[in-house]
Length: 417
Image 1 (cartoon, rainbow, N blue to C red):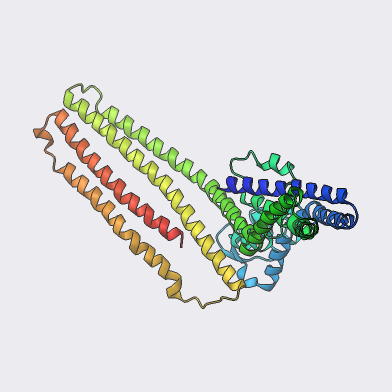
Image 2 (image 1 turned 90 degrees about the vertical axis):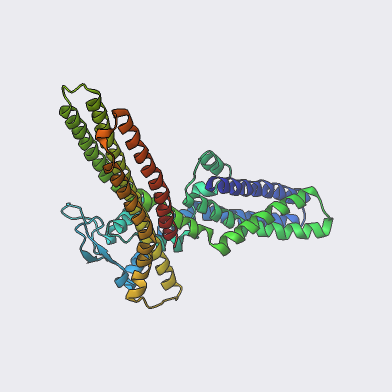
């Protein structure tokens, strides 16, 4: 979706530049008072170039200044956690990386307004579990940010046109560049074009640039009114947070998988050792069943490890969204007292909603175990025993898939609130 929107915005923006150039050429050819109009549009072009090449790229560092200002004015909002999980006051004198062993580690006051300093500042906020404060500042500043790569016609097409998924921040920058061009030159050209249209009548060289500039103007107004750039900044921040959480959890996930694989190998080796020298059909069938049971347990444990990682991501992202929404409410003056009941009601509703399906999962597993216990193994052949146990196992798995799907849907619904 982001790719499609990016390509549409690039197409509109670059068409606007092309037909604006055509319009300016027509002004030159008309001569007379049109040269005055041409001079004014050139001033607008110069303003656009100054914004894209000078002021726009500097604006992204204002996020650091906003966070530093909040550190001073809203100290109570900057209670973070260090590497040991203890609450600490984070301010300008706090070290950027609480795990640093350097003799004189960098503090937030030491960071300069550079790309490296900005990245270190964001990582520092994440290290103290205050990334939501950075996101709030980033959202506030996002509508003003634009890089050179976002504003150079056709270069930006080459830069972003082939990407399968441009970042939300890049799309926000392109939208801001389009808005700058519209307000620096587009509105002037529409005004002059309407005057020429009134004086000389309609012509394709006048009407076509007017129509393209009008479309670009509508897009720019939507960007300003609906604050697309801030929304895209939130998406970018959430994407980065997801990557950070997944990266941190990947080590635990790999470790859990290795432990489960080792357990499986030990179980399989124990089963093989148990049936060494026993070649009768019952022993062979029992051996295969024991190995199959060990592999089933391995599969379930692997799924549980992966599911736990996803649940951690859901919980942390949900908390991040709630905290960010709370910050936006405070900034907008919509402050409501938070009672203990309000703080816990969402969690209680979540537990009530998931308890039903978790109970069904437990009951289903118990039912399967009881069914297997009720099988008269001595009265069945090895083939019949295998068929009976496989039928029960299949039934349990199919029911578990249904219950788990409902449980996952409940969790997904709560993660949206």
